[in-house]
Amino acid sequence: EIVLTQSPGTLSLSPGERATLSCRASQSVISDYLAWYQQKPGQAPRLLIYGTSSRATGIPDRFSGSGSGTDFTLTISRLEPEDFAVYYCQQYRSSPPGFTFGPGTKVDIK
Amino acid sequence: EVQLVQSGAEVKKPGEFLRISCKGSGYSFTSYWISWVRQMPGKGLEWMGSTYPSDSYTTYSPSFQGHVTISADKSISTAYLQWSSLKASDNAMYYCATFSAGSPFDYWGQGTLVTVSS
Image (tube, rainbow over all chains, first blue to last red; front, top):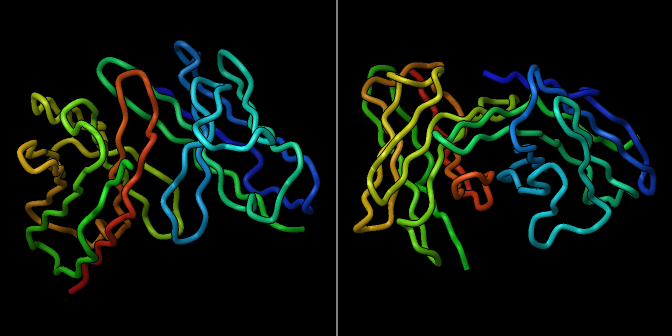
């Protein structure tokens, strides 16, 4: 089973700054099946990025994903007030379906 | 519009039976998988298992195998998560979410809060 590690645990930044979040897998992620979710307090998670770098429907282009193998990154180019939240990476496999989440990175206001 | 509407919050005692539900609408219910995800208070997301309503094929995370049952009734476009005997450690928010093969979770329910207390 793949284990995902996210760093840092908390990222304190100001609106307008660039956020770089890391997700590292214990073994290579097959087919770059790596996704990112955003979760705000009291809300369900929302899919941001799938397939390592593809934005989900309606996601602003300030969000971008990159990486391969075991190292992946979510970048928020310029933080907006609504971007302060917890971000989770997730590895997924096709057959049979299986999913693993990272522990999350909290992006809070500095 | 795709919607997953979950049943309401539950307060139960240890040892009790519980089944919570997730009703899908706005899409072909039998063409997509449904997963259940646990979030314990102040903690992260954990995949519990997934079911394919078309043929009822179900797969579980090893961490949850034997502790919960996931099922679906395609005639009413509803998926279920059930416990035969709740424990205090089952206190959590539970989300359902849809996905297609080789894809992550694209639509989520609003969550069902389960409180287990004596």
